[in-house]
Figure (spheres, rainbow, N blue to C red):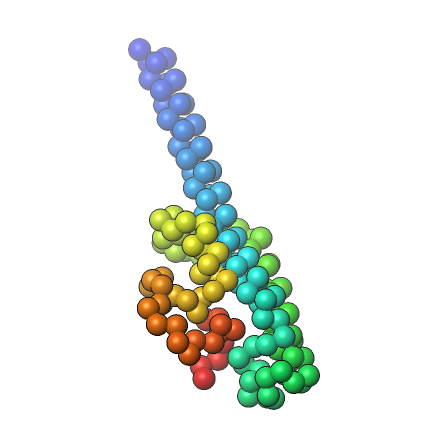
Length: 140
């Protein structure tokens, strides 16, 4: 009987390890989707950034240069954070909250943050929304 108990304990331990590994990869993949979405947004609007609007008119060479300076740093940062494990810089609570949301939704949160409220709901009214905006922009 004790041999059976030892075998059962080993099976449970193995299953627990497998589940933990699957959760790790799911959290990692969803975090990657969010950060990759942010990087894609930065690339899409590489030469136009709301924080550069105060330095020069939109569409001007100076605006494009200032915007590309801001965007290049943020895209590099987003790609770095896409690849490093989220467990290094997020709490257990933050990571577990990612599990109920789909991969594609996390990508959208990064790629088009302007479409969503702070709670993650789709904004009802998008009139006047600047699509170049992301949560790291300075307040207008």
